[in-house]
Amino acid sequence: MNAAQEQASDVVSASLGELIALSEQARQLRLHPQLVRARQAGQYVSRLRGRGMEFDESRPYQPGDDVRNMDWRVTARIGKPYSKMFREERERPVLIGVDARAPMFFATRGRFKWVQAQRLTALLAWTALQGGDRVGGEIFSEAGFRQLRPRRGKASLLHFLKALADQPRSEAVHPLSLAEPMRRMRRTAHPGSLVVFVSDFRGFDEMAERQLVRIARHNDLVLIHVHDWLESQLPAEGFYRLGDGERIVELEAGRKQVRLEYHRQYEARVRHLQQLCRQYQMTWLQCATDDDPLEVLRRVYGRSR
Image (cartoon, rainbow, N blue to C red; front, top):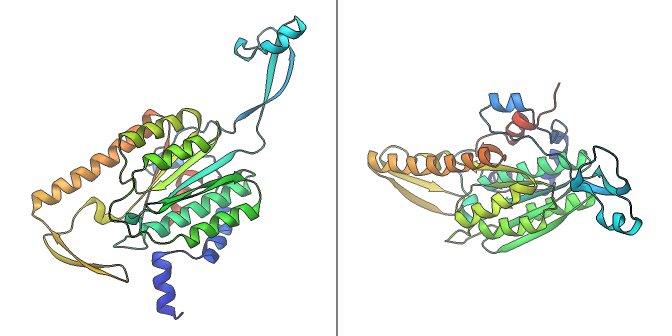
């Protein structure tokens, strides 16, 4: 592969070697948001619930114990009130849902949305592993999905990264709704998990919204919106030629009224997602195709100096 081919490959898909190399950059991150820094950067950040709680033991009831934690089975067997004691889980499951649908293989600047999604996912996965968490997730497209249960250890993480690097390009005409991938993630997520969706959020309908809200009720939820500038606003009126290295298409930008309506629809979709994040305590991040994924994550997850 010559230099030009390597450069084109970097634009449309990240290699396994590149995703592995991001482990060093991930040392600049930790999965506890820096709230002040994030707000200054224009992001919306929720307070993490933290790791889930697991049952430790039962002990005799003491004044002040929460009655909701009464161990009724032990109480009935012994004849005296007992309370359940809990401890913080040593490892928190981190699940990352990665959008590999056809619209993700697009950009007019920088790199394909898919490459940004690969890099964001790799950085988050390495950060979780370095923080002692279990990492898993799902890569989904119109052709199907690949689900990896959260597991500990570097070998499992490398398996996830290889699946990311090997993901074939989707050629589907009609994008898949996000409802089904979100439903699967909801069923996989253990209460108290950190759940991340990296997507352009096309096809985010009412069914997908219901699944998202159900996930947010019991987990920390992060939405990372990957986008290209052309999705938010059409260029000046005229004809434009766009290519992806394999095909060339012509775009006709319409009259001013058409361009304004196009922008309005995009803004309404993004604003609705942001409102959901505020209402249900989700974290919201945006990454453009010409952004540095590390810098995007550092706005919220950068280590304090």
